[in-house]
Image 1: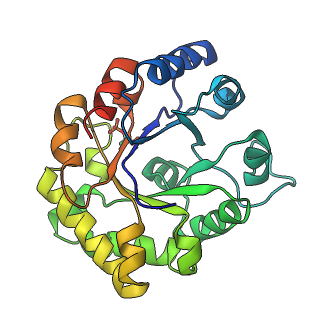
Image 2: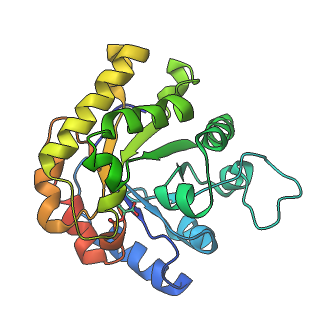
Length: 249
Ligand code: PEP
């Protein structure tokens, strides 16, 4: 996928199916007709309903998947199941999965492989905790997440990855990275990809910022040269605020 402006909404474990369908349809009806790719990642229980109603202007993503296509993995959903439903995108490596479900870089590398093998486009999350940022270790920390989770991929496979840089201290806290902090990290990640792949791969990859993106800060964040959009939690649960964020490009 070529580099794009992307607004992706991560609903986490929120909304009933009927509430979700209603928010999704409102976003689809009211979003501005700009060039942004808009993606909503609802809970698994909502995926079929959203796929059934979707028009072409809002895509649907899963928030996670397993690395096996089938088997004795109670409670899990496979990438093949997502593919068979018509899902094209999956979020992997969200910090809440890493922290609360002990998802390691090695596990994420397996999930990435399997998702790509099933033709899914992966939104791969990375980001440092507060103590790492305070010690100014964020670049090395996030670089290691990319190296361990992604850099075994070929350049062709990397074209099916979007990166979401989400500093953990900014997720759901109301504290946003400054646009300069976001730009600095995104530029660093792009240069790190150029070093390990090529300048073309670095230029072509979309890098989203996540962490308390809101209608009133989206324009400044998305205006940074290396910020290609946002992965949005709380503000994607209200169609008005999310459509304002989409209009910020
Ligand atoms: C997220 O969950 O990925 C996120 C960035 O959440 P919030 O926008 O609520 O900080």
